[in-house]
Image 1 (cartoon, rainbow, N blue to C red):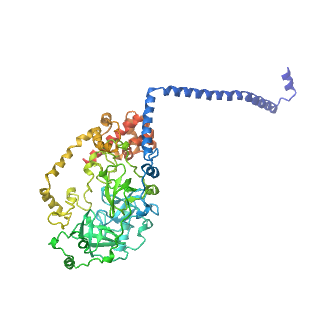
Image 2: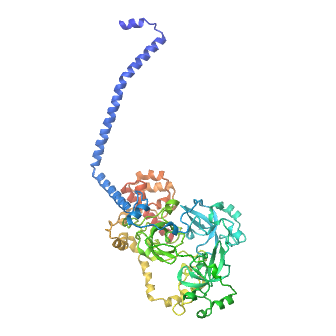
Image 3: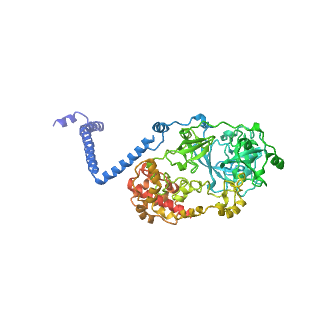
Length: 639
């Protein structure tokens, strides 16, 4: 009994028993620990083997192989189009790679008036300020900051719809801090419901619970309100009509601001007024037309236009001609054909596109957007604030639209206009997107239309046809080439009655184009017709035919006609997605990303596939449902 002998040598108290128990416990733990570690390693190894075997079996599944091939095809197309234009995987445009690919040169920075901003954009949505109305340059209005994108600002007229919003740069010369008009003697047009006498900025800010834009954000307002020059209010001069540069008309200095003068055409409406500095090529001294053999257009109400003389007219109006020394015309900029730059798209002003100088004429350049057809090109001034040097968007944080590629022809399904991605609306900034071709700014019937929204200052009962001037040319141009254009207000209604007599009969059948909307229901035919010319010019193979109408017909039962998806919250969007077929698993993505109704309507097919990482099948159904929602909104708002 050796063990009993061993224990008998020690006293059997509590401390002895505890020490013996601890030694036995540690001894029993150490020995199986090795076996336990070995078993864990074996389990991990076996687990990896099972995962590899399961993965190999899944890869042999025909459905998985087909889905993988579709994803690889989509990636290959994106990669191919991106490499041809120097774009990254997320379609980030690279100027250096693009210029190297097309072997072109950018426009030098010295050719731009203000190439790059010196400060950051400090404006914030909701701030109040004063500014010039672009459609009525003689009016100073109460404005609010509606949106900020990079160094650009979208301004809203207080008390008016968003259709009249306009974009400008943060360093624009036409925006001012509150109180500027009162300080320098300009009349501020108060919002609807207020009068010029009763309007007060302090009370207005309290009522609207808004803040005023700080004065330090207006860097261009640091100087004097009026810089000394040879012009005075009331002086006469000869000026070019900016909307029809072939007309040189009798004009007056109506107002002065900074180093600029407000040019007003005698007996014309204020929509033709514009601000110009002494170096502008559009203003000339009295007698310039006679000196250079150009026809001078006298005022509309002048009794004998053929016998117009400046000496007689100055005596009749008791006015003085602007001195010749006040005119300091600047030389033309050195733009050349083929130079690349960045330019604001006037049809969708929130976008800046890659552009090329297509032609040069004195103080104007013809802008051509890369990849677009020539009918979308137009002329701008060489000192326009809407043209920028290469890299302006990157430095200011503004997104830039890359050149249009053949792969983008079928990128947006609901609008068959070639290159259109549903951005912009002919009704103005109230609708940032469109789904029907008749509201597309790039549609053929809307290309040459300057403005569809009625004038902001007219009564709402007037029709848009009565707002637009009847003609930009003189009314009796063939007989009296010196006559000016008709006024805009009451005379336009009378001229509308008499104008159809002189119009050729070929203009009336153009209304037949309105009978085309039934064709929009079959987008594959319209897309092919609209893209035929683009494909022929680009010399690329046509893409696969789309069958959107066929595959989206069964989704109409999920779209309710009584709801407005623009007002949906995130919970309502999640409920809508959960009801769509094969989209139940993707509800979590929409809940985590906090996507509401407006965000849902702005999603395109690439966003659903790449950003939300939704599989191809549910993505197609989801995108078609969004298309139906957009069409429902358009029909509800504009019909």
